[in-house]
Length: 190
Image (cartoon, rainbow, N blue to C red):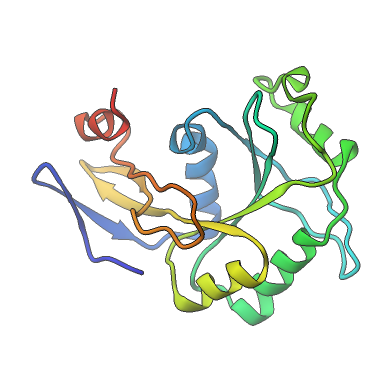
């Protein structure tokens, strides 16, 4: 799924293609607002697996929730065969646990005691993509990852983040408008 523009209250938001690093930065900044009730944290510990050591991009955790999410951010320009599939497979089959989870303690807002009930050995997996191509959807399903479409857009001379309504693995979707804009407040119900 792709789109040429998004219209919110007569304001046009133009999609821009950005690097994975830029998308990761937007998610670090706004991820907790995109996933209400969850904290979005940079999460890059080495995760050993039978196919080698990999590093995820983020984690979503919520106090009182029984599961936590390992996040992998991908852009549609990456090769599914050479990059995305090996990354998802290794993360899915990787060895997690207290040592990996303790990576989150480095974040000043992370309070480990709020997550005592989590099974640290068995996270859930979420792939965040900039474009929901057929190959990306297929790879998410094969890799046992849920998936969310998130894309950078330009609005009011500021970068913004938007995620589309059409999900492809059952995760609820949200829209995102320019930071601080009235459209954002309306979309978030504030």
